[in-house]
Structures are given as C-alpha cells and as structure tokens.
Length: 110
Image 1 (cartoon, one colour):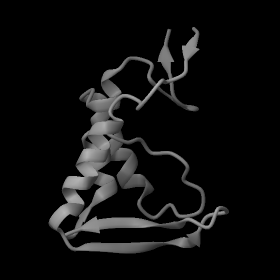
Image 2 (tube, helix red, strand yellow):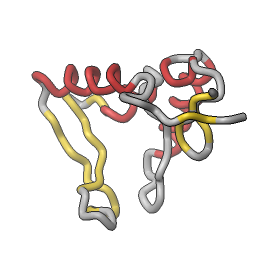
Image 3 (tube, rainbow, N blue to C red):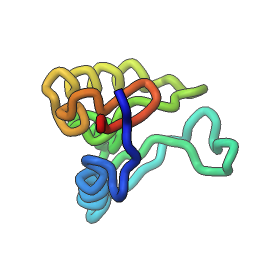
Image 4 (cartoon, helix red, strand yellow):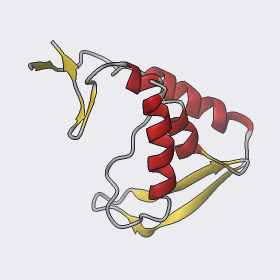
C-alpha cells in the first residue's frame, strides 16, 4: 500500500477547526492542567472545558480527533478510548475513511 502526502488540510481538519471555534465562541473556558504542565517544546498541556463540556471528548465523539501522544497524564485515557471506539464503530468523521487512521497517524491510500 502506497501513501501520499497531503496538499492542504487533511480530511476533517476544517470541520475540527470549525467545531473548536464554535465551542469557544461564547462559552466559559476552563483549563485542567496536565500532570506535566508543559511539553519539551514549552507548550502548555491540559484539558479544555467549555461551559463544563470537555472539548477533547466532543472532538472524539464526532470523529474529528483520535487518541494519540499520551505519555504521562493518563487520567482521562480510559474515557477517551471508549469514546473513540464508539466513533470508530459508527464510522464518524476520520473513521469514515477506510485505512486513513493508522498507528502512525493519518494516511491516504494512493
């Protein structure tokens, strides 16, 4: 199987961006800091909530994200994996494209 590079936004990237913008537009944003506050690049690590709703869970439920790059902070991991499994089962978003999501990221078959 050969894979190609993307020449623009990956599938569902625009929808994910729009969903985040929609959620952040008028709600009260809270950050639950991660166990490790920053990554090796100095980026803040944490969980976002808008009006008490987990932004990560919404993106996973709609198939606009996948569970990846979990290193130290695994407190929400089991919940996230369950949500991802349900979205995958329902073939929502990124899960609707056969063989697009792999263990190494996103790939499009050529």
